[in-house]
Every structure is written in C-alpha cells, then in structure tokens.
Length: 135
Image (cartoon, rainbow, N blue to C red; front, side):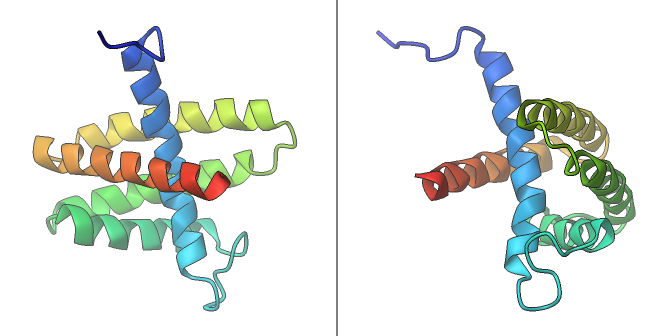
C-alpha cells in the first residue's frame, strides 16, 4: 500500500514544478559565475537569455518557438526580479509560485506535449538537485 505524502498529489506536483522553474532560472546565475553574471549580479535579461539557450538545447526548440519562449522567459525574469526584493520569505515563495504557474501555463501554449514533458522532467530533476544542496 502506498502512503501519500501530500493529500492533493496534483497540487503538490504543481508546487514542485513551479518551484523548479524558479530554480531553473536561478541555476543560470550560478552557471555564469565568473562572467559578470554571478549570484545575484545577473540582470533579468541575462537570466532570460541563459534560460532560453538552455531550453533551446535541451528541449530542441524550433525557430518559431524560440522567440516566443524567450519573450516569456524575459517577462517572468523581470517579474521575479521585483519579487526578489521582498524581505518576507513566505510572501516571496507565494509570489514565485504564482508567477511560475502563470509562466508554465503560457509555455503550454508553445511547447509540444513531448517538449512539455521533457521540460517538467528537467524541472523535477533540478528540484531534486536543489534539495540535495540544502542538506
């Protein structure tokens, strides 16, 4: 018999995916340390560009998808930049979760079902790595 950790598995999965999206954005910052894009130093434009490049490579975005995904990444990188200024961690987490839900909804309209599955898998893997780093 399986024991459920979360009462609403769909809600928990959505939270994990949304949080992972934030981590995906943040990982671009860490990857660029030493190139003027260290932790906290990258502009929203730099973060969005790096995230789009990563998605282009890993999800095999088409030429038609790339500018749309880039625009979404930039839009949400700018919104998250404002959220990063919050001092209340709970409020920040709630705001990021909401933004990530909105972002994923927009990406669903652009990515193919296979790309979306790959994207969600990448997000889940990134969440797992982030949890390991916190230990």
